[in-house]
Length: 426
Image (cartoon, rainbow, N blue to C red; front, side, top):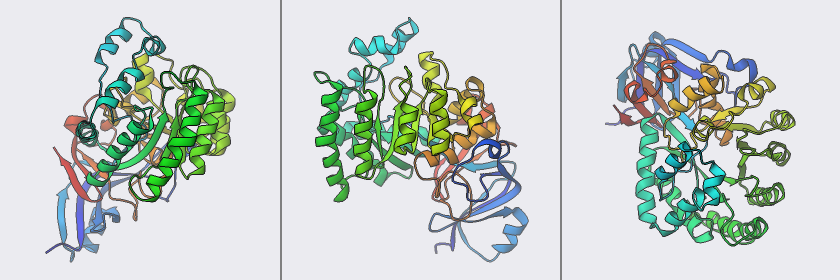
């Protein structure tokens, strides 16, 4: 017989709630000390939502008569919210390991891009790949992310640059959303690069007149589900005007604005995002002081990507300045053929060392604030009653080990749980 409740996690050394008062995001002083319970237990109901969290003895009394589908003894271990990866490009064929060698030898991102490599190389291969091939590799990548503690991930299209291939990628993302236990936020990123033989203006027209109406139609009849619209706003890619038109077009069909801005050159993308009511802007290595202030006021989250700055040897985004100004700072792995990283614990470690974030700031940025960047912080990103039961259990006496042990997540993470169901056990 099925139990009244799905899961009981008992006697944890620490339960990191992150938030305890229903906050949708954390900024400034709220980041200094996250909500943590010592010697605590947690209950997830059969509906997959958290029913109770509290001191172990209190929970034991309260649920002494109840039955559970599964009980896990967490003595000496820590429970944290499932990690949220706020920026990935996980659907593609055509890996670029050869370009890593070129970069190490001194080639810049734009050098490789102009030589027909970079995004263009992956686009060619992705156009040639079958939907099934793309799905199989995508599924494997999602499994790797999940084993590293990710339970909600933003997934972009963007290696098609034509309607047919972009839709192929979005169908692959939709299939994974339906079949896998991981949460997925789907992003249409048809403006990832200007296709060969077109100008940025022509590409923008194509997206606004052809792609977006098709997306609207397919969403309406339930064939695909898209949450966000993205544009690579960059010198030599999409300028500010084309970016504005595409983002506005996406907003008009009900998509959240979540785009790449101010990465390689200062473009005033942060100011544009704040003005358009963007949910999130990624990269921001070159964001201006005015742009940072505007994002703080507009509650537009900054998705910082420590892997990209590290791999491309760019200057780091100014995380400290953003945090001091009250910007909602989130983190993403930027998993893609240019930055091949599945692991949010590694991303948090890099954020602390290279961007000077504290461990509580980094954890909040990879949980509640990353969920906010995806418009999902009312259900994800913290351990609170009524939220989805997505969590990880680590074999360590303090939660900070998840960040402190550089590259150690394989050994640390014992369980990954989504909606109260164990989806990975070491």
